[in-house]
Image 1 (cartoon, each protein chain N blue to C red):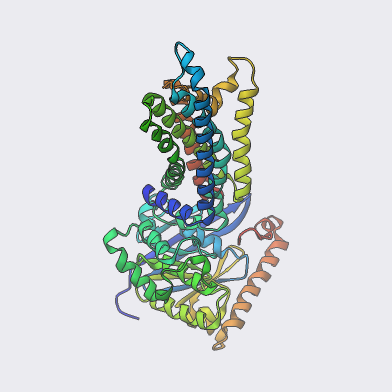
Image 2 (tube, rainbow over the protein chains, first blue to last red; image 1 turned 120 degrees about the vertical axis):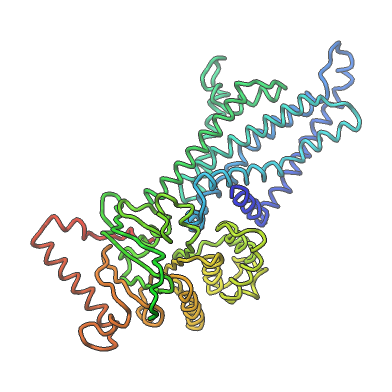
Length: 247
Length: 273
């Protein structure tokens, strides 16, 4: 049932012309970043050659690209999560799911995995582009993997948050602005806090992503993402149940 | 009337529902047998849609029990809902999908296996006259066709109980006739409960009528007997108005004698969305 709802979500996303437009624009932006970083690296290469321990191609090209994509996703994900439940509620399609033999958990998880899969397809071109460099040089696979895992966890946490805010309202635009406000708020609080041990650093997903970005698989950061995602999924399930109680 | 009484497929006892401290539904009890078409009749805002939402598990009642094919809807919602098809007031359509994809999704949602999908799809489309629009995107269909797709999703899994909320609203006369024929046909195998404020619809479709006013069932009998209520034959409309007005007058009388009762009769615009 979770798979069925996820696949329906994916099918709906791919039948919207706007999805394909965003898809095309994003591929262009990703390629532009890649080209820019590659160009900068080639310019700096002679200077790197003089260093005793020069930074590798993965850390100079791949890591900054993943970091930029994490920021882009922060802006982009609210546009996708806003539809998840708010639009179903506005179009009254939620009643089809509520009157069907499935639980609120199925609905929440189906929507979560459906969008996560869509976003994975949207961004899969990035590692593909980066791995194309392995034709000419050798890449740091560990760093690539930790970045991809980090990006996946980051995306999952953003989607879970957006899903919950979408479940709170029947106006998709309010869900989008609400999610964006929370995500940008967490990000600004993080970069604005100067003290190294400020609690704002600890609760910012983008800050937690930094260790993955540097090639570090920190179990506390992984746990943070799992908990962040889990809590908002549970809140969504609760909200759907309350939907039946309070109407 | 056959000798064997068919089994009860839907039974609701003493349903109550509050919205924001106001009681919207008062002790509604309903029972429906297989092969019966029940019309829920009432003015706008009488609580028909709210009642149907509770019967389909979209809204939790504050009190009372609902059983669908002897399965408790509140305790075992997943099992109970397998026997249920529901068309809300606004058909729940994913407008960006085509008709076939949408109906396939609706069928899978109700637990129809992959192997039986094609047959269920063909049958539902044939019953609702949708053969020619299978590959069309739902948003490009006319209102009448969209309504039919809505009915098709409610019957695709051959449920024992079919709940239709104002199924013919906004359709042209020819479409209304087609849909009424279909509902009659569905009533041969399943139980159908439909809400409406059109008396002709009740007259041509329903075996039984329940009249609802201000969240209470104030009259329930066979359609034929409602038409002959008070000894005057074929006066369905006049009798409906007479019954609802009698109820209003009785409420007004009890309200003046008992000020505490006014609470329950306060305006309830929020019941119908």
